Amino acid sequence: MVAINEIEVKNILTKTGVPAGDYVINPYIGCPHKCMYCYADFMKRFTTHKEKWGDFLDVKIYNKKMKLDTLNGRKVLFSTVTDAYNNYEQKYQVTRKLLEQFINTNIKISILTKSDLVLRDIDIFKQIPGITVGISLNTLDDTIRKKLEPRASSIEKRLNAIKTLYTEGIYTYIFLSPMFPGITDFKEIINRSRSYTNEFWFENLNLRGAFRFAVLEYIGKNHQELMPLYDEIYKWKNNEYWWILEKEIETFGIENKIKCVSYFYHEKIRKNNIARHSYT
Ligand code: SF4
Image (tube, rainbow, N blue to C red):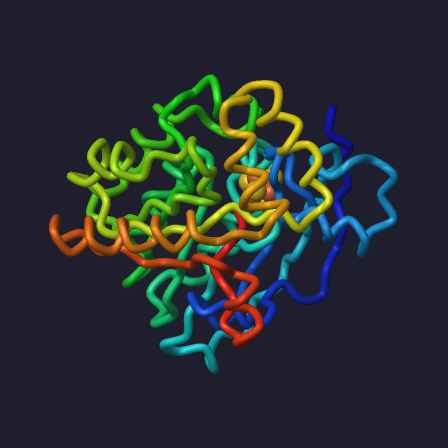
């Protein structure tokens, strides 16, 4: 059960320090996809909601024209702390209406989602030059997906979505995020999807948030054999696993001529003032 509120907002475009973008649009506050590891749950602090993160959704009502004339050539992300194609977008169409304002502009739009609802807006994507559309994915096992991302689209639906987008001429990417140690098999994901994916992005699982306990509990119950590895990484803070994995990705990308972009170690990255792309 998700508590829905409609809220009128004065501004919808926000500047962002994320390297993949200059501005971000989050059409909703909250995210009903309720992923176990959601890094965006800190947003609840800025609301008065009593519900848990994932159980409320504020629908932003913005009926004005955005001032886009100064944004020529800039990058705008959908979205960083919500999924712009969560299930309620079907009804409210906030994302769709906002995207319509970018038609025939010179503004670079980048969308990242876990929902095949994104296919609904192909007609608009085709009218926005330079748009890129991605899905995030960290396993091809839908049993694991159901535990980690209970309300997002199935793996099959996401892969079919990215394939359809590619076939329709949209530039596509898959964001392997967050990569779960011992679970996310990057080669398997790439080999499955490389024929219809222009780029692959990577991000390691960070367990600094309130979800740390839930994730470790899930691993302990469902992948007990991985607990020593998780202890090594998250208890003893040994990053060797990530260094080796990042090198493997780089080598695999070079050998197979696949464009791979790493957003690993974002704690370190943040310190250097280079943030990463969306959490969705
Ligand atoms: S889709 Fe993204 S924002 Fe939504 S719950 Fe999952 S991780 Fe959080």
